Image (tube, rainbow, N blue to C red):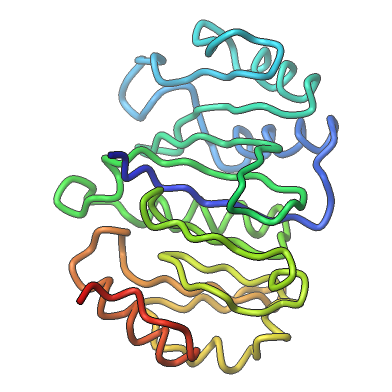
Length: 230
């Protein structure tokens, strides 16, 4: 079974054609994303797809990918952020997510394992860079096997219903939960964002050794049910 890392961003407004184009240009121009990893010209993992395309189109330029996804007002692009291969899924929908405008990231299971991935900071940096650009209401992420459902009612009310490997609260949600409470949470890492948002990380990677202990501690701190295996 897959341990793919999925990180949804729940947005204030739907990204339309021009917004999608600007987002992808930001990734390539400002974040220096590319069609291949550093020190390589291998573009076999760069590609995109939309509802109008049968399968994934790999033999393409960056401009073609951006134009096609923006023109279709949604789709998926796989690109490189330094040594990190990541998928950006625009306007994807899932039964376990609130029905609000969203974008999500997917990271191959190879990267979630600390005995393989020696650069977990690449995931952290990319997640926060997109948060700063998108100003989402909420960001959360976990492996596919661990992802739990959120209720639309709880999300709209700004309630904390679940704890994930990464938890990014926009300023409004942070205020409803209690910003100081979040900033003093016993997480592995706490990020105080410039816009008033807060990020909580349970461990360097989803499969890091001490993650379950941190998860249990956070659940106790926020009065949530434990997911420990007994």
